[in-house]
Image 1 (cartoon, rainbow, N blue to C red):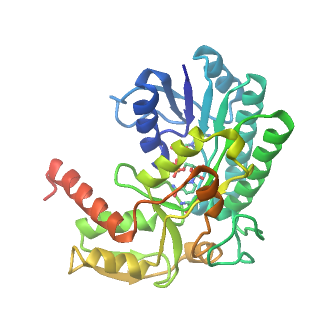
Image 2 (image 1 turned 180 degrees about the vertical axis):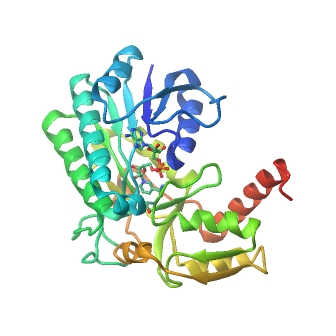
Length: 319
Ligand code: NAD
Ligand code: AKB
């Protein structure tokens, strides 16, 4: 029976991934952790406070719960990382090294660690960015992701540790809030569309970025973790493509449902980060190796986001 440890479990991805892991393996088999306790005191399932910089504390949980798989999600995302580069390096790199060392020492069956489109930089081909290409990221977050990918491949090759990874695009979901990334605007815009009917975008109107709906991202993660190890030709991290759009495109998609919605553009420091990232992603390795296939396009995401957020707002009587 698998016993699963998740770090950074209260974040945007962890909130949704933990629920699916509980469905798949059983609530009691999943041990969610984060540096701070949950806001909701009635957290569904096992939860422990855990700082990923505390190697002994991670080891204590691995031993106590006989952990067989680790999903290491704790990280500082791109926009926050630019504000505190030393902290981002420390958490993103030392946290990962702690997990990899412990996984090696305790013979953990499988480790999952997310990478990002942030591994790419201004020298990377922007359209249909290939799996293997020039990277040279110019953000501290991207630098930690490239170094993390290389470290994962090293542990995989040298110590036969089974580590799997995806370079997620910007993730969009209605069950959790984003935690300080450049692509956060693509979640915030839906909340503001319903709350105020308008939005001020921190990116330029034509800045196209790769994005993905959270159910696709969670499904991709579980599919990769279930894939036959022999078929996985990528030891760093897999490109996966969802859909690509600009702030202007997402506004138009929202206007199909909320015609009076208004957007204006006030690019800030996040525009420079976005401009260094790809416009679209070639995910042929993921499609060939483990049959990855995206399900949601931009209009599908918009319909889902608006209908679920409306239900949520009605439930708390904000209308
Ligand atoms: P998030 O910021 O929402 O969540 C990260 C969590 O890590 C937070 O709950 C935070 O409290 C926790 N954390 C921070 N420092 C910690 C520490 N020292 N010890 C333990 N926990 C700590 O981020 P997310 O969006 O959920 O991202 C999860 C992973 O997916 C990250 O590795 C991120 O780089 C990657 N990713 C996310 C996206 C996205 O769009 N959300 C895209 C690409 C990659
Ligand atoms: C961010 O914007 O930092 C993340 C990411 C694409 O890694 N959403």
